[in-house]
Amino acid sequence: QVHVVESGGGLVQAGGSLRLSCAASGPIVSINTMDWYRQAPGKQRELVASITSGGSTNYADSVSGRFTISRDNAKNTAYLQINSLKPEDTAVYYCNAHILLSGSGVSYYRDYWGQGTQVTVSS
Image 1 (tube, one colour):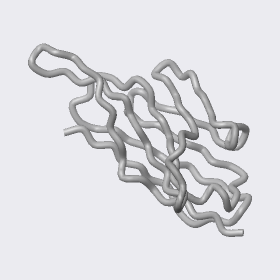
Image 2 (image 1 turned 30 degrees about the vertical axis):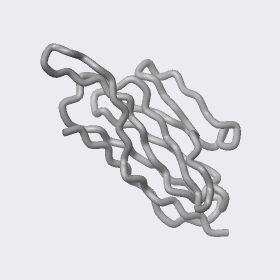
Image 3 (image 1 turned 135 degrees about the horizontal axis):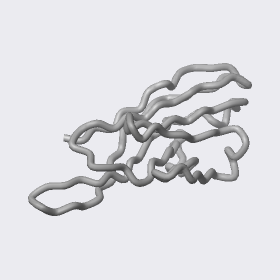
Image 4 (image 1 turned 60 degrees about the vertical axis):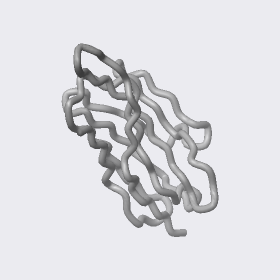
């Protein structure tokens, strides 16, 4: 079974920093993109950052310059460094991994979500 687990959330004051981690485990052949999403109370889940296996990154305009996504392919882990935190960054942060699996002679991609990690920023 493939598992995706986020960690690193917490309660921080505005202006502070956090580093979130997303670790994938299980019968993984490789991981294509790894994405960070967030969902604030009463709002839709939004994509904040993406990284390909080659290290190419994309960010939502609302977080560009403050968020940095990175990954360690050997560890099947992605990170999200969040600086200059604002109260509006308060949300549950989710990781999505686009994972290549193999079975019965067939290879296929499947998306896996973690359970989320709560980030709360106090003003």
